[in-house]
Amino acid sequence: MQDKEVAQLLHDEALRQEQTINLIASENYVSDDVLAALGSTLTNKYAEGYPGARYYGGNMHTDALERLTQERALALFGLSADAWAVNVQALSGSPANLAVYTALVPHGAKIMGLSLDQGGHLTHGHKVSITGRWWQQVPYVLDKETEVLDHTAMRAVALEEKPAMLVAGYTAYSRIIDWDALRAIADEAGALLHVDASHIAGLIAGGVYPSPFGYADTVMMTTHKTLRGPRGALIFTRKDERKLHEKVNKAVFPGLQGGPHMNAIAGIAVALHEAMQPEFKAYAAAVVNNAQTLAQALSEKGWRIISGGTDTHLFLVDTWLNGISGQAASEALEREDIIVNKNAIPFDTRTPIDPSGIRVGTAAETTRGKTTDDMIALAKQIDQILRSILI
Image 1 (cartoon, rainbow, N blue to C red):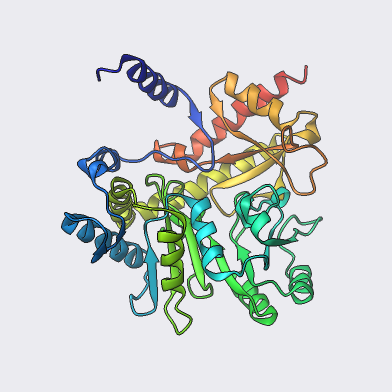
Image 2: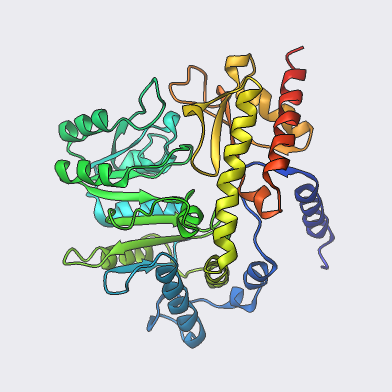
């Protein structure tokens, strides 16, 4: 590379990734094939529009690629093209959620989403997000004792507020979601059910987490977390008389963005193909096993795990109960080359800048070949690091 400054930064980042233990729940490591697609000549092609209806010439190969990516996305999740459609152009999860709301929720109407401090996402209607400015968030919370979803309380809120959309699927929630219960609540309240499957997409594809497709009206997922692909997002919509797919397509383009990043779509296509292979199911199972082992080992060392454990790739640790803030814990671990993120815990009394806990995920380290034995050793290391700053 002629640009020595950028080359040095790329080298330094590669070295950082190599030398650290990555427990960021929303990160993973892509294959060389995905990287090759991202760095391909598709970077040079502008493909504004959709296959067969582009606004530029020379798109015969990008049309074929986008159709292939759609076919693979449907096939990976066992969906019929007669019943479901998928948009593969959204640049990432936040704009993908924005596209769904723009397409299907009237401006100013109510979106019912899990509160941010309870494990929801900014784009589920939180006030600091554009989604909380253009729409009204109706928040719901977890049960304070069990720290899991309270369907009775959720139903009461939904029936009182009558939201246009109920959002399920979360960014810091470690338990199995009862899709059937949420579908029933949405139906009773007259709401659409939108599932943000960003974190659990790879677990669903790997068969270790229940699929929401039998229950949701729309499903959005990012492709760079447990699905182990590049930055990007998929928006699945039911095909019926409501024409949800047509509305979402128009919201993505021309509503919110211009030409898609075809190199990223190529990377997504590769990642989807990889996720169809038998070894991906073994990977997904190992991710969950590693998370459960690490959570249990930390619990045995005196660290409180939110909800008592995990069914997924992630869990929250209440570090403040032991006298360490989330920021202090994150910084102490990073000094020893273990990367986590500070995170609010349910009903947190501290600020988001310096919350009461950390979020821990195992997808990235499982990709690197870590086993349950490694997780037990890692728990000992984390415990020693955190307790050293209490002295």
